[in-house]
Image 1 (cartoon, one colour):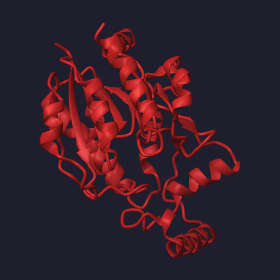
Image 2: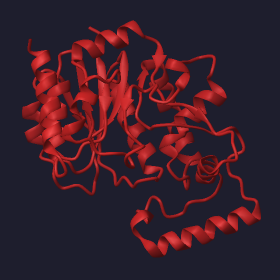
Image 3: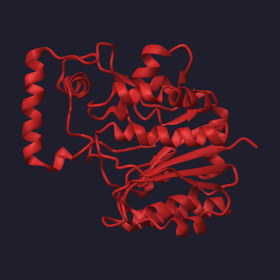
Length: 297
């Protein structure tokens, strides 16, 4: 029986993770979870009791920092363990604050009908607008603090980082001379791509060390610069080509509330992020009940 692998990067939202696990627990799935080393909320035995139909695996915990190469290490660690265990039809990377918007039967049918396609957001940086320049600066210049601190919350380091980036700009530093492609870090990919990424694990880690938000560009840049003829991108890699419902217009990203239930229920995407039980647990409960009821019909 061909199965799917769910790869979950979890941090600190126990309530959502439990709901997510119940909704993806299926005989045609295996589940791999990475728990951020900084987190203390996880009771592994509790999750083993929740998952009854899938095989559940926990990868070694590392300290993951936003924007750092540690995010790539985490993704590749999940892929590495999954590919070592089995040859899955698809590997779905999710965060611990995501939820499915479809039943497992619908999800498996959709990916069977589209088998061979890679569900990855993939857009080229080819302009001189502000967004393009910011994305270019993430990979061309050295970002020294990302794997030690979250500089978004450290005013002093933010100022120092700004000075260092300005200096590198004046010096003409450019660590990355090939075309840059970027998009969401969350994906659904086939076994052959998963194994290619694992094979180049050390290359990616070395190349993108000191890169800011490399998790949003290392797969996209690798495929589009080197493997365009090998892999078929779903919907040409356009926005939401990864079938994730994420709202960047209302937030960074927006956290869904109960009033968004109809929008999410009617979405043609397969997964949605993000949710926060502290902000609005009702939307989490509503989606859980909606999907769970459909799966148990």
